[in-house]
Length: 418
Image 1 (cartoon, helix red, strand yellow):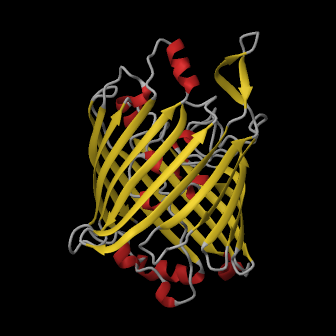
Image 2 (cartoon, rainbow, N blue to C red):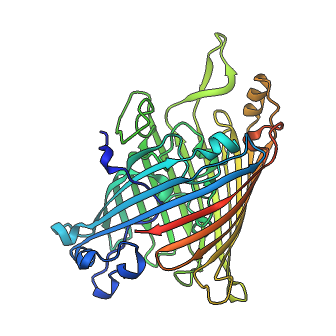
Image 3 (cartoon, rainbow, N blue to C red):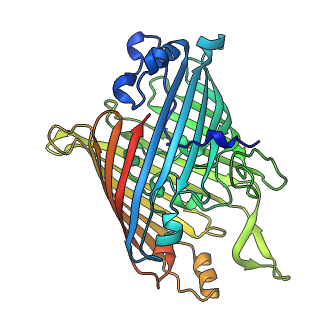
């Protein structure tokens, strides 16, 4: 299946709109979106059970020094979302449908200028395209403690998520950097068909979830557009996560501790090992992660202070990154009168696998043991639909190459709620 070109759109991994029966729960579209309430039609649709949302994002970033070469051009990201309450529409109790159309275009800054394994922008994609990204139906059971979801589903919308890290522009604060480089995870911007089962405790303080999906999203032979292709050798990708939210005190606080495991059923080529005939040995790819995020203090002189940490590891046989550590601090309302602004500082260290280092040496490249990256950013909420976010990044050993100089990236992100 391929989406028509006229649907060129894009993504921000946000949750679908949550419906409520009360009139006051209707979003204030006139204040919260550039396009407004469409003469009242948008609010009327919401009452009927259909919510439309959109985002237009621009990253104007430039590699100032080091890496592969200096330079940079803007990249853009446009998303349109529709959430449907199927109880209101068709009488299907506790059932929700969600569709997200996305399109990503513009610069390939990291690929052409910086050369990092970790990445520069979480809207940079290998091939500029538009694509159907979310397309699923979810049924809730047992007072909404259980839910079953089926359809096109990106795992990084619910698994491995650290909400306190969501302000950062670099990709490794979303999907795991090591998992992202495996054979085909269902993450931005290419999702796979699958099933997700989730349980939440009655007081919402504990949860467990698991998903099984097509082992290779889309069709690698046709990277543009939307493709649903179940091909021999795809296998399945599975992931499970369990966690607790023990001390959350409100919508603006963070409190989550979780652990997860993932793996593929199909085997992939080892980076180094071969058999007697010189053919790469085939091995299974798997890994795990643990994360923690917590609001440490509220109402301080620098606003609400939150911190996060995540560690992840793979087998190290088939992907460059063996382990990843993410850590950072999130300050909400750091300046007087700017309670919606966010200041963030984060650091990621990727430990490169021994087999990747050996493979690089075999190719005549001196590989570093790690690649690391810093990011400092400040998101200023100009109004309820426009945010401006300056960002500074630095990469040590980009690409894991000892000969590649330290790279510095600066720029700005613009977010416009549609």
